[in-house]
Image 1: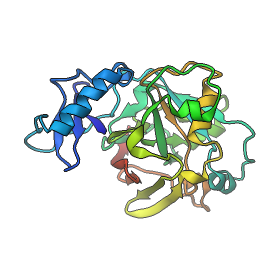
Image 2 (image 1 turned 90 degrees about the vertical axis):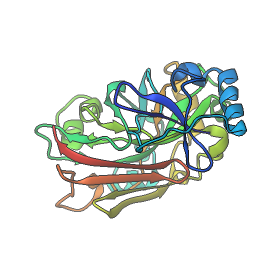
Image 3 (image 1 turned 180 degrees about the horizontal axis):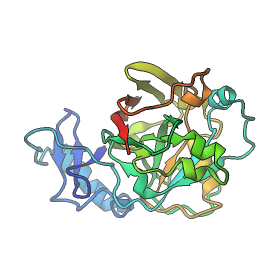
Image 4 (image 1 turned 45 degrees about the horizontal axis):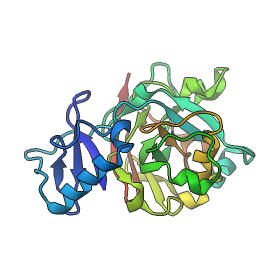
Length: 285
């Protein structure tokens, strides 16, 4: 299934994108797409049955704003330097264990919402990422295979980063990762059964129509199952938590001088095969 949330920011309602590309209203079945729903197999089965029976009402009128596909996110956990080609382009050693940092849930916005370039920023960068959404509480998981059974589905994340704040201002990476609007998410939460192998997904990003990133999750250093297993030994993962799993080569930081960092007026577009597409204009904060 392709689950999503539509409407004005803070007032989104649950929806489903059917096989014909029609938006269907889920409000009569569930109150939201969130951790509570993702952990409720009976509720998910009711949605599947209603979709198969074609009884869900269409959302009429102009195309609504698409919000983040998951509401009330508990935490956003991120993996840094998780693609071989990205580590190479930045001159970093291949990490022996996953590099972990956090983004605040309030950085999450819709897939087509405006991204704000922070005040004082000179090095705002782009990163297309596969995002994992947890569906079952995960603690001390024993294997990558077991971990994949705790995944509700997948979506697209744009891990926007301010490199000077992240690297040149001391402290942890969090300063360059938590500016407002720095985690567009969506458009859809595609359930794990529909995605299949998460290590076989092409992902791309364009800036002002120019292709910048063109990779595949097959190049991940730590695959999705291993990332979820690993994290479960350091923190409890709850339904609705989001994991950004890293970005392939092609970020501004890895390009020759003058590095083409983002500015107000730029437009970034992202795509992962089967998971949809994002488009964000940039403006100054």
